[in-house]
Length: 223
Image (cartoon, rainbow, N blue to C red):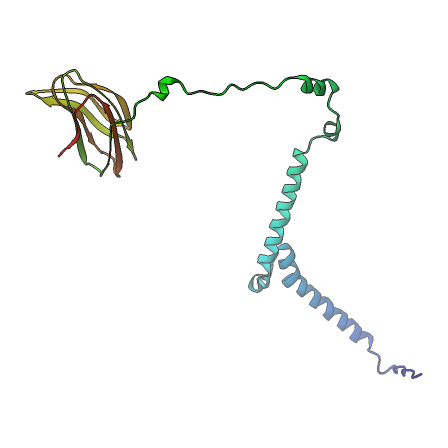
């Protein structure tokens, strides 16, 4: 069996060399700690080297994940019920009552004849009004005739004037400013044209939807 020769005293490192090696190792470890470990693990970068190497961002992500995990754990602890309440058995009387109580009967909802008989709209028009633009719609009606209407302005309120003209007569039924929707009945005061003038005073386009039904001849748009 071959035995390794023991080194001589001259071949052994001196105390000064050992001390110097120890100091160098400590310095290298300290440099690695400051430039690599601290930025990558704790997002602490006093020298700026970790940011250049992309290690600081890694440490920030780790710290953020750790904070979120701690917050989730704290939230779960606050929402969990006490052990005594969670494990307490339900009273026997409540179980017996639940078993013997009959389920409530739900009556089906039946549409009323009034809703079922609601007539459909005869006419529906849809027009886009640009800022400042106006339009007029008229119904040809005999004196005393009644028409139902519903109009809505999508995109903003508008101004309107409900009026009529014909047979040398004219009438103003109603006016409104900044109105988004209206509905009701229009009764012709005389034979002629009866309807609405609309104007968009908004800074953007609006869409006017007008629906009518009742005793009238036709719905026409005045030019």
